[in-house]
Image (spheres, rainbow, N blue to C red):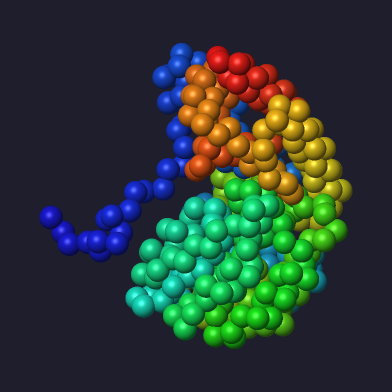
Length: 362
């Protein structure tokens, strides 16, 4: 038997959730009738014109992709009003997080983040050979920035700020994030994970991109997986100072972003009307579902995203099992909490009806 790293072998591989076909077989369901509300995916397909653009480039699949993402990078730079050198693309923000851990982590170091938050932060930290320092959220399910600041020590190399936070959907205001970053030593890299940025409508919230453009120890991560509906293509990007991104690129495999992903992302840009329509629709559906959960007396966090974090208490396992048995999938978290992705109107109605049935005892 080969010898492997014990910190890796002691881990449990990340569970992406049961495949729809498996759920269908187990419960005698038609896969087409299953409502999947577990992965924070968009209920809509790609933006107009994207599928056609992606299909056209398939004819050139014999060639490697553009390693610099030149066309996409310049288009995105124009949209964000940054320089091309301020952007580094990756195979989703998850890949970029892994590369950041490789660059900054290592034995004897630690990575600080709030908890609960994106579970992959645990994996990234272990893969990097670092120790994770998880700071419990505040009572309102927001990041405890004071607690995170206090957790930083001489061995801290990275602090991850998930804003909006996953799985709670909560935000911290722009001035709070800036004050927090002001208090962090320049030797510590602050990663602001903005995967759900495009869903936020609260005026207290602002992107951390201006901070990343002016400070070498700040990076902002974004993804095309959520509101842009390109989850299958695995494409995201980091925004930061060129000197920081040059170092990050040294740990990135070449040709990491496929040509189809680049073309699909490029075709998604410049459609501000469609982007605003999706943001508005998600906001209305979120308001409706939060109202439905409140009517049923279920505690929840104040969501600003395309998912809602709510508590079923000691009924969680039973309710989730009943809902799964009839083909409505939500995600169990810890401590009696669950997360439901906001779907389309039909999916949301089905979720509420099935939840009522499960709460009534199935």
